[in-house]
Picture 1 (tube, helix red, strand yellow):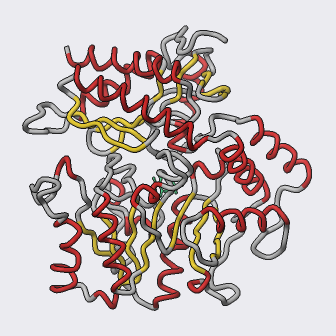
Picture 2 (cartoon, helix red, strand yellow):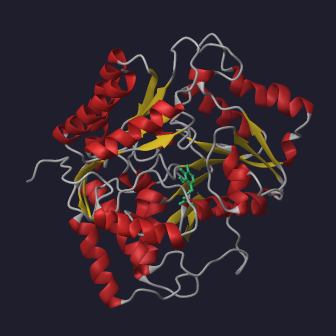
Length: 442
Ligand SMILES: Cc1ncc(COP(=O)(O)O)c(C=O)c1O
């Protein structure tokens, strides 16, 4: 096994530069973080086209929970590709799709009969939840949180409130979404402190919003990420989520749990919401469910189902490659005890990050659950002014030294290696990250 990370040519090397040149010329502007062009990857190690080896602490944005190209997942997809790739599962039948929806209905929270809508991405899973909620309740309004990220198509974008650039010049969005502050305790929107705040940020919904301008009987659903992802890896207090559950139940509002980023074992439990001991009405999954083959799933009580042919459908949802990949991924998670491993590795990762915070004034907060961890960088721990430039510089130094990172929130860095990343590789990655923090703090 070669030493990892191993940087032979400062990235981007000549082969990467060629790819980047063409990409920049033709690909629509998106969200590029670092100029790394992949050639192959396995487990937590990525090889770029110039022969550099990186530790992947980004997991393709929380997709590769069982690691890059897990042999069992690869075999399942390969074998399926040779048999049949597409047959329109919305219109016809095949065993893989029925097995996957059965499995998902068994492993999603809630001891009730469920229905599953399969799609191709997180945003599409959210769109389906929006439609299920409207269909079932026949109500028009939605609630979501400031800092939330639920996707970028027009419905999910209307719920998203993580960065102005995501919404600017796209108005008007879908009407009827009310955003309320999230339980971001490090920067409490009400300048209160937990727990003496009495979880005002949750109680305000019923006591102020419903009492003053938002008739609760008009609200179809409330969307929540169990751990806010793009918004900065913000973990709410347990009481916050419990109050949201109670209030929504009381007013006949569906609670939609967006597990697109936090789900599939990432937090050390299969679904992030399990940390809060509440049962949602609708659960949305995507990203790590397919280990890289696009898939989205919206799982809900069967009584919310459309029940009318054609009310909602698509072409590629539940396609055979995605179903094969998702079933193999779930099988790997179970047979290899990945969730237990994630919880154990997560404790180690967190310990290293906490130690790093002790040594680096620039880290204002370390937070997360399991293998979903982040640091928030500040210019000064008292004023908490976000240190965005320093954050960007650290992410840059890290890829140049062989660790792939992604930012989150205004000045956060997320640490989301594959759940199976061994301690030695977590340590090797954190050593590099620590050296970057030291250099930037100088
Ligand atoms: C919590 C959450 N929901 C929804 C989405 C949208 O998923 P996709 O990019 O697959 O459309 C994301 C993407 O990052 C996400 O983090």
